[in-house]
Image (tube, rainbow, N blue to C red; front, side, top):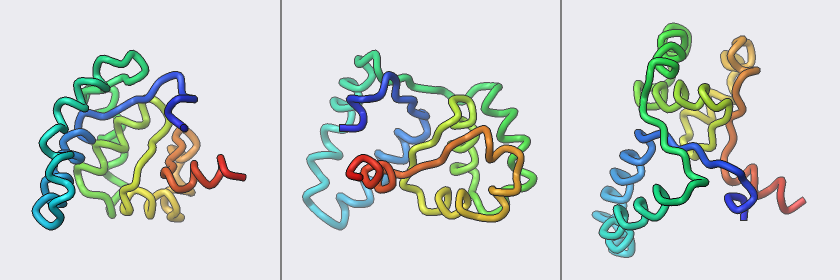
Length: 132
């Protein structure tokens, strides 16, 4: 399992809110998500108690990245920009967000000097690499 091989897993607090909101939306359409929605906080407590997981609040360093990005990253909304800004503080972003992945694959990102200071990946890519 990928997470078992990592020394640290960095998590943006905003991502937790997004996950809870997504579970709420999914539970309204598919009953099988209701249990995950109900025990979300308990599962979050388990992660927070694990030293491997590092939770990041939005802070001045991320805000500096946000202020630099906001002028040239037009296709991303404010929440994606905040998550991307926080990821710059650790140099890596693991996401399933289609807008962020599309941005990563864009010429705009490739031509940006910031592109060399962060790696943006998704689970599917990582699992593909591990199976080779």
